[in-house]
Image 1: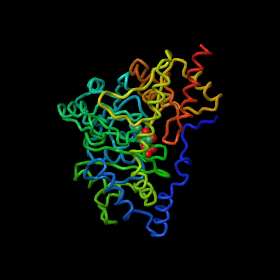
Image 2: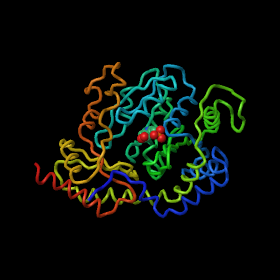
Image 3: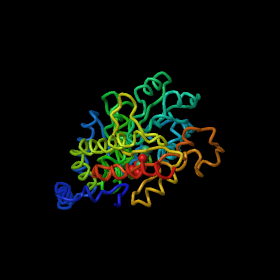
Image 4: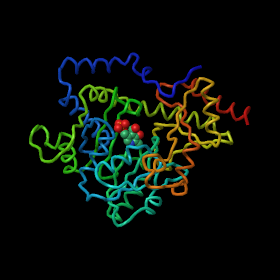
Length: 371
Ligand SMILES: Cc1ncc(COP(=O)(O)O)c(C=O)c1O
């Protein structure tokens, strides 16, 4: 059996509503902005029960635009998790601030109020809570913490579309949140796309202006500031609007597969399975197991036709990009350990139970026979 890590073509087969939506955009001749974008922004905001959604070209721009629109002094420190991918650090620098890395909780692999507290200085003005893998970072706690310390809480929901913390969707706890709709995400476009959501009207207006070269839309040449071009294009908006109707179904399928892995793998002594924080409805963007035998297991699965990935092979502050900071593994012991141990098994809505059982069987077989 050949099992891909992710395969979008399965979803696209017979997705007639999606093809119809694309055709409608093509026939309308409106490819940038317009009704498709407005409609998606309205529907996505409604899904999160927030007043404002601003479509962007991708999730990285969404994060950058939030930081830029906060208009904090140059050199401001923003605390961000050491266990994440580059957009959650580089966008802080791009906006003129300093990313300050904190370690994460070893059980749930997300930052916490305690790990953030260790990094707060008089220059800290914001915290970026990254909801990694579909897990929710403890945003209710983090919100309290940020309020007590007069900090902005920003959420990165690129991997957590409709993940719930205490019954409330992530992305609704902080000042603003960024989403990515990269094709592999739980709500994925057929190319790059992203958005910002917020309940703050002034911030929403500033982000729209920045994303339109500094001119408040719909005006084109009324430049109030320098900005950038970060448009959600109409074709992607129509795709997202169509797929949004099935997002709950996609998330439920991912959850079904994740719980099946949990059940099948629960007795394997040498691996640690991922789990949801209490009171979190996880959306399983990624299913990361942990084992000391990660590289050997990955090879074994590859030999049996199973594609896996590593999210992530290096703790962000220990990557080449931050060599000048001279961090060591002792600065971020949890993140450094995860980089050696995590392995992501295939999980996507169209993966069949039979395939998940095959994957689990090969994992179990490896530990039975090889060790
Ligand atoms: C946690 C996280 N933040 C931000 C991003 C950036 O999103 P995009 O790839 O759409 O720019 C990603 C996507 O890879 C992500 O996983």
